[in-house]
Amino acid sequence: MAESSEAGLRVIEGDLDARGMRVALVVSRFNAFITERLLDGAVDVLVRHGVTRRDLVVVRVPGAWEIPAAVARLVDAGGHDAILGLGCLMRGDTIHFDLIAGECAKGLMAQALRGRTAVVFGVLTTDGLEQAIARAGGKFGNKGAEAATAAIEQARLLAALGSPPAPAAGAVERPRRRRKPSR
Image (tube, rainbow, N blue to C red):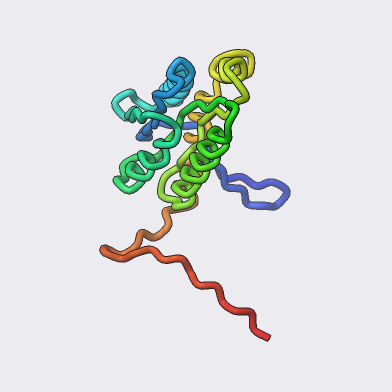
């Protein structure tokens, strides 16, 4: 965690020191020829920044649709500083792509907003194979590696900001009611 002052402002930001971090990578088997490249890039970055291989766990799911459910279980179980969802969706001729991509993103964001664990979206959403290859180690870099870098920084930032209070045992988290505006 780095704290600095910029023009008199207090700035809190994460750093890229991943020593001691525990990280889960939830990886889609669908389009494995791409997702394995994303996984390799992510693992390389995590290890180079200090995560030991014994502190990494890879969870394989059938496809991108299943990534948020596995991430939710990992968040509930605790024990990870960061969780990355890695997958690859390529646009086809139907709306299937739009449905899966949108729900996967929403599902991961819902877990990230719980604030207990850094959750990162590393799912490629491309128009086709050429774009996917270019983003999985091709001319546009490796988005798995970029997701790993973001996960390290976000985990350190969340740690610096402090943990949100956990609900009491047996308690159910409920949405707050909106107050009616006073007149």
